[in-house]
Image 1: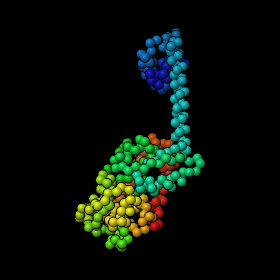
Image 2: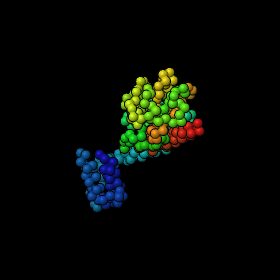
Image 3: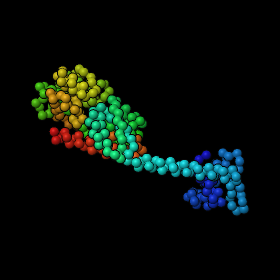
Image 4: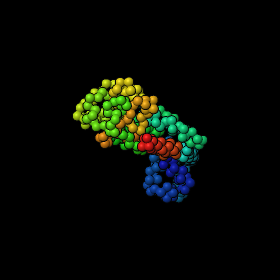
Length: 305
């Protein structure tokens, strides 16, 4: 049984003719007849009978029409519940992010949403390859994801809200031969040893591109995905690494500096991904607005610094 069939039967009991039902439901009389006939095929007992000029419901028909009222009530209540859920500025919003974004965003986000009446946030970090970020939207309301310039765009199955473009810089020790340069040419890096991310992760591709522009192959000595660990290795070894400008935290390593590359366009897009219907919720919109504010603050802090 379908909702349209039950509605047609209920209206027929109230209005007494196929024509009147068609007018009420804004459909053709033949469509109403088809709905009633389809419903009758699912019932072992007759649902209607002719009562003079009127079409009336049998006892079985009236019982089914009353049941249809219950269905309509349940659907209306469900619709109102969804509307309240979508319009509720509170509730819980789950946010997933890759490590460096989580380090930069999670703390300020939790602090900013601590006021009464604002959404509660539940945060999780993930260390995944670029193509795996969209899958996370099945289990998390908002997913902070990154992709390199020139890499494939996100699939149409997710909605994308751009947050910022983050350049990738070279991190090295202050006593390194290149630390005094205002910017670094890719050719300057030919003889350097790298701390890189694991194979298949976006920043490895960027290192390959930089080395190629400089006319060499990258000499990767260490592979570490977590930037704070990579910073400790750079500090101890004298290697260099590629790190994002705004979300890298070097406060524990005053002996390290970030230097921009002279070649423009080496960077990554940081986007917020979600299933399209998720963005319809008021609490999700509130959290997204807060994340946008934090992202803007990251770029402003870097410019001020």
